[in-house]
Structure formats: C-alpha cells, structure tokens
Image 1 (tube, one colour):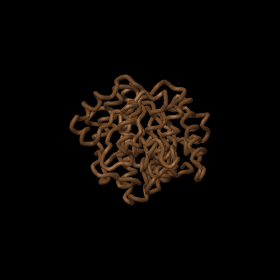
Image 2 (image 1 turned 135 degrees about the horizontal axis):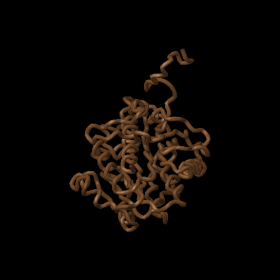
Image 3 (image 1 turned 180 degrees about the vertical axis):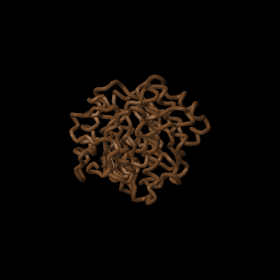
Image 4 (image 1 turned 90 degrees about the vertical axis):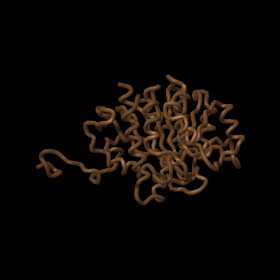
Length: 316
C-alpha cells in the first residue's frame, strides 16, 4: 500500500485535500508558471461602499470548485457533444498579497500576479475581491495587444471620482476606459437604481461604451447582443456576480433584483469565445458570508470552469 493507503492511487473526492481551484496544481513561484490557465486570488475588498466580505471570495470559489474536480479527462457536454477542459492545463498560483488598508500596495501586488501569468503565456483568471481589483488586472495588460472589455454587472462602475476616491469598486470601468490599450467596453446587465449618475452614462457612451440592461439583453437575444460586440477583438471578461439575479447569487455586497440567469451568460460567453480570443478573466464580488448555502460560490466556480472549457474548445 502507498502512504495514502491504496495501491491504485487516490480517489481524491471533492471534500478531501487542499482546496486549490478545481484541485489543480499549486504554483508558489510565479516565475515557474507553465500552464494554459493560471488562477490568481485577489482577496481585496477595501473598495466596497456597502457590505464588505468579498475578501473571502477566492477561498469560497476555490472550495466550491472542488465539486467539479472529477473531470480529470475533461467534462463531456452531451448537448454540445464536446468534452470540455480535455487537456487544458490549469494551475493555481495562490493569492496576491494584500496589505490591510493600503489600496496602492495591494493593487500593485495583484497587477504583479497578472503580469507574471501573462509573461508565462497563460490565461489569467482572477478571483476577487471587490470590483476594484479589475483596475490592476487591466493595468497588467499595458504591454499586451489592445483589448475590448466585456462587463457582466448590475452596476455601471463608471464613477470618475467621489470624495477623492478613484480606485474603489465604483470606478473600475472608468479607469479601464481611460487606458489606450482598451479599445471599447460592452457593459451588460446594468439596471435599477445605480451608483452612477446620468452624467456617468453619458461619459461612458462618449468614451466608447455600449450599455445594455438585462431587459434590453433579453429583447435582443444572445445572438443580437453578440452582433453588437466588435468581432475579432481580444476580449477581456469581467464578471461581477451581482450581474446575476440574487435569487441564485445572494452572496454579494450589492445585490440587485432583475438579474441574469446562468444559461444566458454561459451562452453569451460561448458565443464570445468563437467571435474572438478571450485573453483575461476576473470574477468579483462573491461575499460568501451572505450565502450560507454556498450557492453563489458554486455558481461562480461552475461558470468559470465552463468558460475556460469553451475558450479552449474555441481555440482548438
């Protein structure tokens, strides 16, 4: 018998072992990343304006992702007749270091992590954290080819400055639009009472944003929405979990009723992956303490793994 008790190897059930993302290999030294996908935690939530707690999002998403770790030889989808994730090398590079109350140093550590992943030629998948972590993620693409930003969110996040704050979770899309390597934004799911005033919507459209609510999205349908996204661009995907309806994603700091359901966004992402390469992803605002069922984190993990699968199936 082996040290673990079985000659034939370990079953390694979801509740056994260390909860890396999808039970993938952990890489401590970022200079040694050799993978197709590298998952980075960004447990920063100092940018929140109401309920905090998204600093625990990366841990919750990782733990939830172990539910889907049985797909050692890929995950077969009978509807598409495709085995997703087959041969896709995923590693978990741990978390960027966070310095309490210090946004500048914390964001810099997140940016360094994303830059290390890009330098290794891997797809960065960043687990937030509040939505301000998108700022250092986008900054890390400064030496890359231009990107078009696709945002799934209840809120526009296009505030320029409020009481001197420019890097909170209400600012990231404004900061992205200012970057010369961001060619435009598609902002989907924006609805209800928002933290951004009309002037912010006007500024967003003037700076290259296409903004659709959930109702407008549904009226157009997935194909109609995809037709509005510039084809053949390099896409960066930023997913705020509050873009989904709180009936399926209650574990977030700023829930907003009237949100998306799972298959709407999965079908959008599947279509997006065939329209152009998706070169970066962050998923933010999972705050597990507001959802003791774990449903929100499971939704996040399931969506990310299916997204990764569709990205690499489209590449093949």
